[in-house]
Length: 425
Image (cartoon, rainbow, N blue to C red; front, side, top):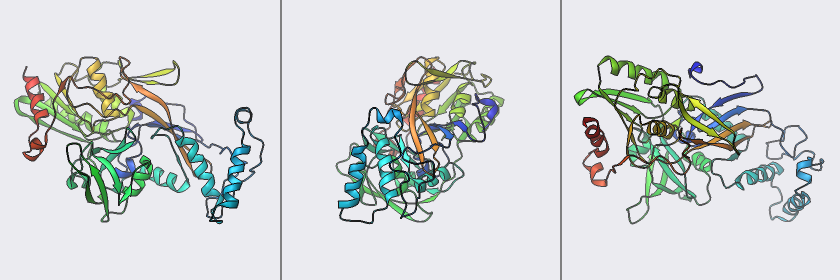
């Protein structure tokens, strides 16, 4: 990441805060190439029922200082006698007497977060937190697809190009009904990610339902190592430049710079930016890339509770501001893709063609807790420069062009063709 291209936050050894942006937890599915739309803060945070000592994560762990006086803000509004009453009844009356205290404890904490009814706010026990942190560094094995939540239903956001999920036939919008025959009803995104991940060469069976089909079906996918080249470019007919962004990952901004240099050196007169099935990535990459069209103006607004907000302005030299541009999007375009598409649409710098984008516009704060567990919590939402909310709404294209089953079978791309037609005008 080019740290000179983003607004820096205060950084100390005890508190490292980075801004990331994407579909957050499906990182584990795709193989660690992307980082999910959240503020990544490594903080030491004391758990509410702990004396400050680390709770034991082993099977025989204990909850320490269970009767410690509660903080004032809790004792005024919450009667924790009920909590301990239920705790004791479970320990004393449940048919299995050897349930570890730590299992109950972490389950209780997870319940607090799940009560928010926000699929992107999640508590990770130490084992899950370790796996999540590992997914943020380097690549590993997976199926190569982003997953998310739409109307309480797990769905495929985008299968990545040439990855196992795409080769097996998964498509953006597919509803995930079961994973290895286990129903996904009430399953969180993180639980699904954990079940889908696995060693290269092993298989996972995903039961999907696709709109327009009469019944559900099983798709068996063999996991593989996920390596993504996030930027691809070429000069197409009539000197039209073409850049496809597969993600907004660590190398995207410098690779995009190379693409622009190469295409401008070949005297392109217009450009197609393809963000289809791009699930997002680093926020700073989205802000830098948007800046190629927007001269120092706001790319995205981060809005917190109340009236507090922060604007992120383009810092790149606007070398494309006078290049006629079309942006291609679809239902697999999410997060950072929606930031770029929304900004260019707001400023009239590009015509957006394709289908409605996914609508992932919330910001998550990720904190490592003292015992190895972690908390990911939604703290803000993204707005376009004109104040349009991205979350749930997505970005509506200026020109709607759908791809049909027949188009896929015949390997036709009407969206790309419409982009050429618009540029010819």
